[in-house]
Figure (tube, rainbow, N blue to C red):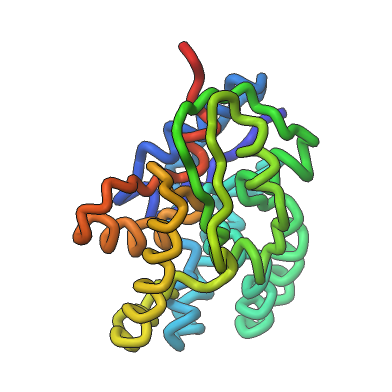
Length: 243
């Protein structure tokens, strides 16, 4: 299968190693990988902050860039959630029937990484090896928008050498929420404090998730507290081997 990577602007700019891990993993599983250089922001930050008209050109660009893709995979439940949940609404707002048709055609091709592996490829053991104590934070978009369910945990349970420990109150938000963490800083920090306390209770060396945005928020607090816990995107764990 030829897979087109939608790396997202956040990962491309701040966490490029996540994209490299995806390429390594997918090629190891026998797939060819394409990275369209013309891709840019999905428009989520515009749409979520009230600039919905400004999101229209970004939706147009997305469907143009990926129009010939067989399947589109991203390491971000948040951005994939934007495509699935709101691209249709943006297209409707544009008043452009052709754009609406193109969005309807492309949305079913867009997957978050763990969702793609488990639901599309029917793979739960990717041949990974990661000898560390790990806990997993299910991000809000993966849980509540994409509804990926246990896909990430099923993949992690099959990683050789891993000591996977359950995160208490796992489904509670970490408090990031994009601009929510800025506009509602006190509330965000209170939520983050709860999340960090639960992570430390597990005794894990690593906290993993399907979104680097949440991991950045969590990782900042873990670092400030000198906890010794490292935030690691699930793609990096799944790409790791004994070699």
